[in-house]
Image 1 (cartoon, rainbow, N blue to C red):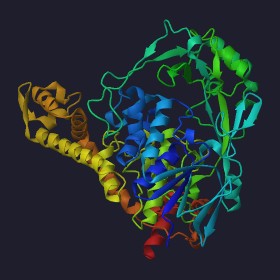
Image 2: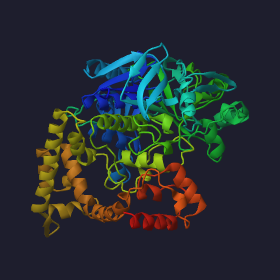
Image 3: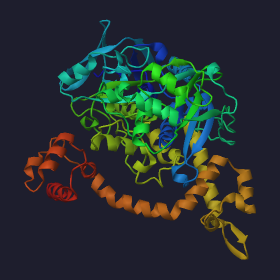
Length: 604
């Protein structure tokens, strides 16, 4: 008989969502963490969401995850980004009280009957007939388990760099996980190194706040979670804005070789999309300033996060450079910025369920898969936890397509592309983004989550009411006529016109007064995008045929003499699960996909 528990290693955002997904399926989740007090900790920026990332948080919530409702409960400021563009790429973001957030997560853990926490470190695991059977702990204990989900983040052989100084750590003040990487390598997994960084923290009382521009939240904020009570009236604590200047750039440029990244001390590759301040002055040498945001890390915090000033310069250089910025002339550092280098396991070694291809019951999630960010980690944790639990229950796995969710795009990119820098979710990564709006996440995903047992009945009831309201509004708009500039037309046709919305006509305003703003926004957007989505769905239907063609797990690509050598190497190494995945493997030519398709069809 199978063991009825699943072990999750790591208490970061991936581990948190993995444990909740397992527990929500009615299975015992055992979380192993080196520090119980660090569970749910926001180790870097004090924010959740943002461009592309906000979509992930909404999807996590629609699938029963905790990140959205925790953010709503602990938010200091809420804002929808990208509003100068179409609604499909509007992205919610929130400044968070990081102390309150960790407490919220830990309380949710302690009150869940299916979650237990062990303060220890996983150092090895056993495999019986190709399947995970137990986990070995540093203090000598052995946990029998049906599955193991590893979510060790930047802790795997983590190495912090501050100028020429370097020391072992998983993040500042917390020791690294040493040994688990070697265990995985010895069992046959490939490993490499990546780098990420964080800005310095400043003493709030040392900043001259007078005259610094404010950056506030939205007047009518939008929550992440469908479970959050409406009307939503959170705090709106402003951030402040400062700019670098030529003097700052000269200080950094003169000391460039003292940066860990430029001295050659760091071997891992950092993210291009989120460069350090050193990278910015080198790559954008024609710019005489860069905008920085001074963000409180918790309510009434005396510790300020300098968003946009990630660095691995020596502490002295960081201080001199910051003191050359208006408002920061006497600033004191609470903690210097630093770079952290860590092991990651190229995610081509995973299935679309995030189970490893090598061992049954072993799952990887989070930054160890080559991603960067709380939201990407949490999304993977949820999928890994759900699939570990569903496998134990002998139920169909939760696999999301690129046309179904940003989570689907994220995982498909991870398992088919060569990840040689920390991966971050962007709206531009989703080719079906018209259908994958943040507001439509419940409609896209909650029904499926309910069938799988991932969400509670109260959330499902709220979803059904929301979906019913959206449908009713659309029906009303498609049967109600309005008078506009001497002509009569359906309210739905009026909304489809450029820059026309429900609020612009009396019938629309009446409707808005009678329904929830969330439902009205989704219904109005569905109507506006209707024609474009139909075209998009037609493309999806044609491509779906290729997505559904399964490639045998041990398929021998050498059987195809007309396949290029590069395609044989790439496909043999990555081992895509479907023809659709194979078509997205970097370096595989369309002609080779045609050859493979014909071969598979002849043997189907």
